[in-house]
Length: 234
Image 1 (cartoon, one colour):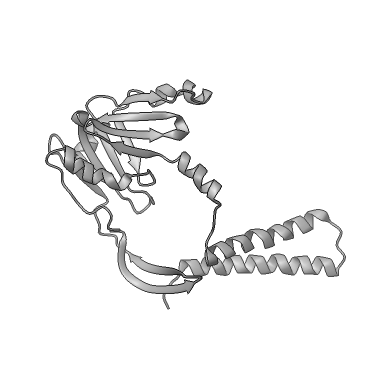
Image 2 (cartoon, rainbow, N blue to C red; image 1 turned 90 degrees about the vertical axis):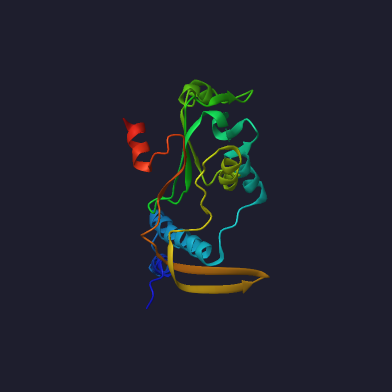
């Protein structure tokens, strides 16, 4: 039998839900008048029930919430001078000039859900702030200033364009298909459901433990990943 972690989670949620429901019915039958007990049993019903529904039918957010999330999402844009890395939550934009890029690394660790590009610069990125930044962002503005290391993760808007732009503006790039999920090994099972004109496919993969977690995409001195890390940590 193939192990399905989602089914195991749903099983535990169903058990907690049934415990909460059974406890509530028992207290009603026994005429228990302790409010705290009903609150606890209610939580045992509400929380697992909500999570079970989400795992089964998916979680939905309103358009307003989605719009708010998009407004505070990090984003990058490109021009002939360099890369603009906008961080709305900190009211800052870091500008990375192409001519000051010394090294670009790519990492994709199994212990981390994020892929990321790491830029090492010969000169600090130029920092600008919005016209009316939050007071805390003003106070801690120096935290972002004069940075020679910029890390951009895959939840950043336009992240997928980085590889293409690097090839366009830098020489001796080591290209690779970063969109391929190398963490996936062997496909164990696949299940497709059609509901309300929506097709949903669930795939369960055996992890691949022999993929390149660290890559040198670009380096002025043609160093290896370990040589770069040693130099930067020295």
